[in-house]
Image (cartoon, rainbow, N blue to C red; front, top):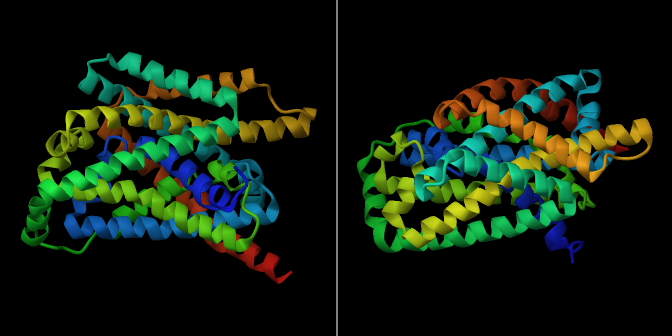
Amino acid sequence: MMDNYFVRVLLTPSAVFLSVLFGPSYSSGTAVTQFMTINGPTGGLVSIATIAIVFVVLLGLSFELARLFKNYEYFGFVRVLLKRAWFLYEIVILVGIVIAISIAITIGGTILDDHFGIPVWVGSLGIFVLIVLLTYHGRVVVKKSMIASVTALFLVLLVLVIQLVSAHLDEVVEVFTGTDHQAGGILSGLKYAVVSGGFIPLLLYCAIGLKTRREAAVAGVVAAIVSVIPALVFHFAFLADYPAIIDEPIPVYTMFELISTPFMLNAYAAIMFVLIAQTGVGMQQGLVQRVDAWQLRRRGAPLTRNWHAALAAATAIVSVALGTMGIVALILRGYALLFVSFFVVFIVPLLTYGVYLIVRKRAN
């Protein structure tokens, strides 16, 4: 079942990428408002289109490079891409993991506190426990849980689109027709895409099933499109309360209250909670793959499940300690720090030397 084309090429890479992307990016809607909707109705669409194009290129090239050199953990991948400078990506990705998980845990705890009255520390603890448990059970369980979570998310988004079109289409149309359409959106979309795309080497375990160059390309295109669908839905939904929604600390909370029903908000909050945990799990899985590869080379055996769980717990604890800053500040500062770092140690090498390696392999 897990070896058929649909699961290997279309479903698994898309589910893993979106699951990891969702927590720090889409769950609260803050990243959507600050990097997409803030550019206006059409500028937001330009941002989303920019993000999709960048994701197609980065995912397709990364999947193909990983397939050609059979390196599905980030250490082996960046050793091929960066040679002796591999340690630069290692430093950046460890900082990135801590920042991303910190944002995700902070958002999860805050939304549960605002919506259900559950103390922030309880929500953060719940996400912490989910990260540790899913990491303990390994890659197969992680992939299956991600597929289930993303499926549930898209069902909620489908209902949200129906409710938006049936009751609030006039407001959205009025915003499009009544707002000055200024140029912009490419730079903010590029910044968002570079930071999010910088985590791709950490997620290459989702590309293990890809067998041909065509499959790598198709997987990259599909994963890129799937990953921007929530942003597209949220952008249009936010326009029903634009521009006031830009200043909301948790825009999706306001948006669901305006457009949808309490039941759908509850459903989204539950799915969001799991997907935020999946962000940590997906990143931890990449880190586990890295440590296991090191252990195999050094001692001939990977770490045990208990050590996997301990590694996840240690990373999550550091992330929780960082999460004392506000959500918006945490996201904006984190993105500013990671943009330059990922651009230098991953994007530029992939688009230059990485392309050269792929072309040379094909010629050989």
